[in-house]
Amino acid sequence: MRIGDEWKTVYGFGTEPYLLPDYEMANWFVSTHPASVFVSTLMVARADDDCRYTLLNRSLAVHRADGSERRELANAAAIRAALEGPFGIRLPDTPDLDQALARIADTASRT
Image (cartoon, rainbow, N blue to C red):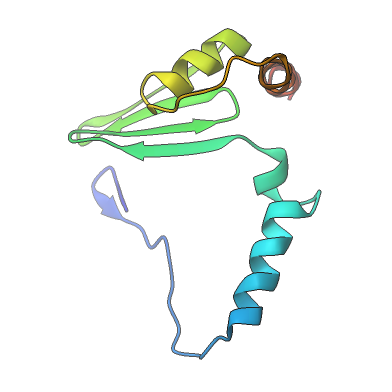
């Protein structure tokens, strides 16, 4: 990944063989364990033609070749608008989702 004028390593790959159970266990852990960042954090990324959008809880960033801009989303409605707008995600209109987005907005604003 290029950050400013410098290339940074993002991933490393080895040649060790892995079996299906290795992947199943790792996938189960990161998708269910309470300490997993994927359970406790809203993370979304989408590459577009001229930029990359990222959302980490309520922090929305737009990364372009000439720099990045970030802004904090104020509330659940703003998070919903970002998910449906730049990320193109169709969200259901349900109270449960709105409550979850409100918890994200509230928790993130206290940290």
